[in-house]
Length: 114
Image 1 (cartoon, rainbow, N blue to C red):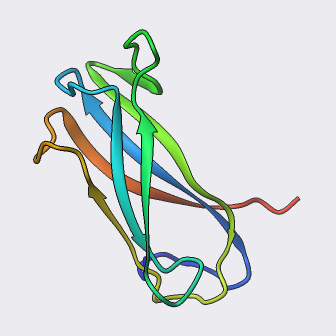
Image 2 (image 1 turned 60 degrees about the vertical axis):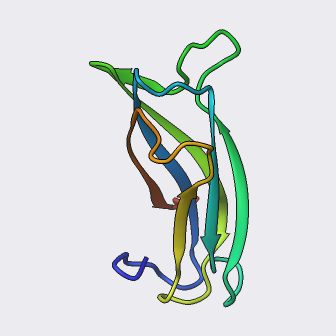
Image 3 (image 1 turned 180 degrees about the vertical axis):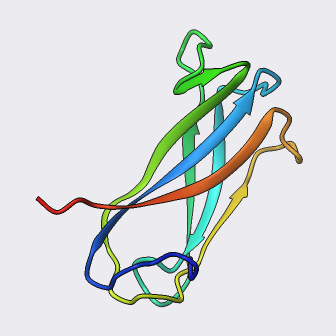
C-alpha cells in the first residue's frame, strides 16, 4: 500500500473487490487476509464471503458475463502512519487455481469529512 497517498490520522474504508465469470462453480469464497493495518505486526484473518444468494443468483452487479462484487473488509479504519502497510490476499478453497475468478483486489477509499 506504499504507492497510495495515505494521510496519517485519516480514516479509510477497505473493501475486497471480486470479479467472476459464469465458470465460478461455488456460492462463496474463503480468503486469508494478512495485514498490519491495526498493529505493526502482521495478523491473519480468514474471511468468508458469499458470491451468490440462496437461489444461486450472483450478488453484486455485472454486464457481459462478468460479475463485480464488493465486500467490506475494514470500515472507518484510522491509519496512524503514512506508509509501510501490508495487505496480502490468499484464497483458501480446496481448488487452486479457482476457475471463474477474473480478478481480485483491495479498494482503499478515504472517508469524506462531514
